[in-house]
Image 1 (cartoon, one colour):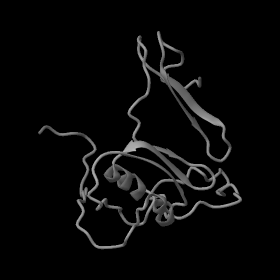
Image 2 (image 1 turned 120 degrees about the horizontal axis):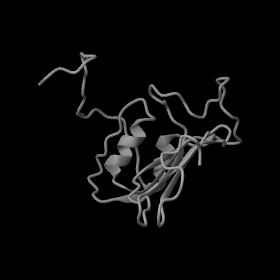
Image 3 (image 1 turned 180 degrees about the vertical axis):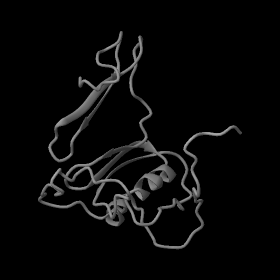
Image 4 (image 1 turned 90 degrees about the vertical axis):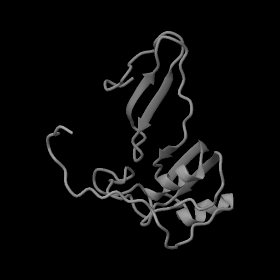
Amino acid sequence: MTSSAIQPQLSDGTDGFVARYAPSTNKLLYASYFGGTANDSITNVHILIGFPPSGIAIHAPAASLAVLAEVMSRFTERPIVDMTGLEGQCQFELTFEPETMGDKLDPRTGPDGTKPTVDRLAPSLFDAVQQYGLKLEARKAPIEMLTVTHVEKTPTEN
């Protein structure tokens, strides 16, 4: 376990385990157990996002298309909206090169500002979703937007 662990040792029974590695060096950044005094595990994981040198990796063992679309939107210039009408949860494994990282720093970038070299870049997101018979189409559609125009530093009474 790392010194920053939320739970540095096993509790009674079994616990879930989470670790994060630096994408560029595979160095362990932090690791922690999660659990109480009984047999605990980490379940109902809908989406895991990884940052291997070759692209963005999305592992979704049980996610709706609406949730997947929201996650994929983090890596595109325009929002992605699920218009399939399909219900339920599906399993997805996608690796793709992002269009953008939004306002986030690309975790694949090293301290010197360069990305590790790879033999083959991942496909674009537009190409990656085609393995599931899906396609991304540019179109105009209404979406909900929240605009923050003012923020108070200290809370006030309601």
